[in-house]
Image 1 (cartoon, rainbow, N blue to C red):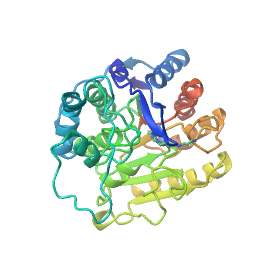
Image 2 (image 1 turned 90 degrees about the horizontal axis):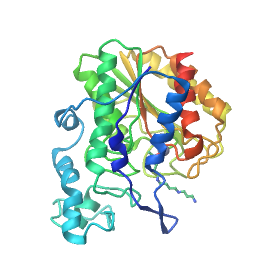
Image 3 (image 1 turned 180 degrees about the vertical axis):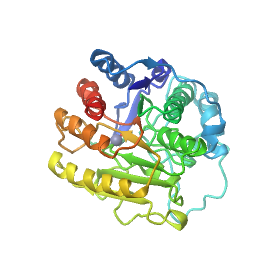
Amino acid sequence: MIVIHSEEHRLQAGRSELNDGQLVPCYEKPARADIVRARIEAVGLGPIVEPTRHGFAPLERVHDAGYLGFLRTAWDDWVTEHGADIDALPLNWVAPGMARRRVPRSIDGRLGFYSFDAGTPITAGTWRAATAAADSALTGADHLRAGDRSAFALCRPPGHHAGHAFYGGYCFLNNAAIAAQALRDGGATRVAVLDVDYHHGNGTQEIFWERGDVLFVSLHADPIDEFPYFCGHADETGTGAGDGANLNLTLPWGTDWGGYARALETAAARIGGFGADALVLSLGADTYGGDPISRFRLLSEDFLRMGAAIAGIGLPTLFVMEGGYAVDDLGVNVANVLTGFLD
Ligand code: SP5
Ligand code: ZN
């Protein structure tokens, strides 16, 4: 399996995120991608190549032009206002009933306008790291279009919480959605996205909410208890042309492989009935029992079973890296999914 990865990921190295009422060191850090890459090399999964640059156009197929413009200059605008010694974090958001008609001029106002949490710092290298990750996903999509059965985009920062015009959840550009759209634009009639990250892929859901040509299926911790809290419920099924093309399979805290495997069978059956030409797999390994911010109980060996179950869907598959914060075990867990898929 070809692996696409850029060293530019390390340009995103935020200092702190707001968690439990305090600023704590970012869970989403460069060591995550380094350990995954090291394990992939150790098991000889396949060649590791640099992404090719795809430019702005495929980003604009998924994201709002104003949002992309904001993201590109946000750090410089922040530095002008606050200096370069502090990462950019938002401090206020709109509530229901408050007007949201105009984009603020102030960088603080725009950070709040385009975000949904205080866990996702913008730094000097955020734009370059995020675009390199999107280019990795797009390069993976190119390989599927050329006939590969699978590819792994080792993206960092992750993407599935980023929507058409918002960032959050450590995500800025929705790498999986950008790749899924590129597959459609490259000739695939229907594309399925399966999201196995512990957290609901709210950005991907939002982007394809009214689309009948892209099926979104997500297995995640029930948002009644867990981030991102405000969406990901089972009764969210899409609207308009997308009515019925969104499936949320919510699972309780404490879920182990038994409960997870049953939901994965349901997901596979739905994808099988959709008639997709390709599958984009949002691969978070924060379902692991050792994850510091999550509450499922998968074991490292369960990720082999997960990979085999994904292979059973029988579609050309682009894996796109999302979350997973138990850094020491992340390489093994991610590589297990990929080797489980190939075996
Ligand atoms: C890509 C991805 O996995 N993003 C996840 C973002 C989650 N951010 C919020 C984490 C809140 C964790 N709270 C845990 C409290 C432990 N005491
Ligand atoms: Zn996650």
